[in-house]
Length: 182
Image (cartoon, rainbow, N blue to C red; front, side, top):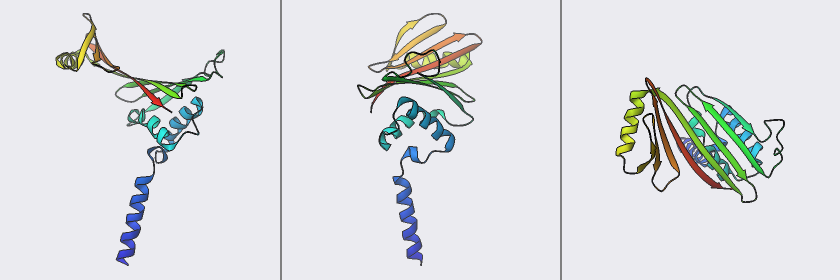
């Protein structure tokens, strides 16, 4: 009997590992993924591609979050609602930050262009501390700098950081560009 229970447990364990990321997410997160896929016309893509897309925003859906989005069809006067290029802007807020992720699907090229923005506000001292850390980091270069802000780029990548200070407050904005082949 113990052997049977052990074999069943092993089978269940292996089966659960084989289920893809997008197939195991909770209802609210799945609603966001489904809205994105439907609005971009990507509902028939492979599980692997769906997982890749889900992985671009799953980190934003933790703690107490709320999501909304806009598409080609959001504004009723849009003349590009039925365009072959589709847009999905995902806005997520939680108790610590704001995320704005823009997805543009170019169907002729079968590529998804993704721009992720993470906005974190806080004290000016915290932003200055982060600024000093990045200024010393040789992986980053300063593209522009004034009294109230610095614009960093990670060398050889399309990743950016904006540190903005207006004492006593400040804000860090992280920006990242990606392309997914669909």
